[in-house]
Length: 145
Image (cartoon, one colour):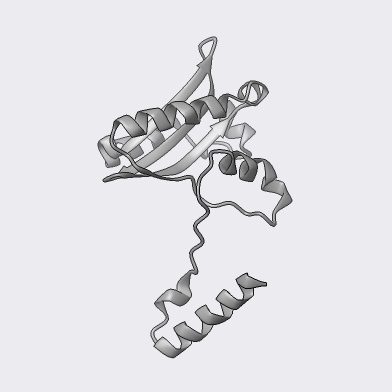
């Protein structure tokens, strides 16, 4: 509960029963990793896997964990466990470079040496090929600026 509060989640946003339901629904494809200090959880994450890929679905670190940078140790251990399980690709979720409010999260995610993958979005699914081509060309030109 302390990590939920530290993350700014409302009241019962993340209950242990919710995590149990998720674990039950996904079985071994849902991995929950908790890091503790003196018997108290200080950092944790939920990772969903499919084949040789993993997606960092949710994570939180409480005040005590932030003081010791526990999330870095947790991710190091997570990578070790995922590699042993045959996972070769890891998606840490998005970053928002233009949002100062999440600068710490951006710094954290970039710190693991991953590759930034940018998805164009719904224009890829535009029904008219000419519209799709035109919008993608404009987006591509904008990125070059």
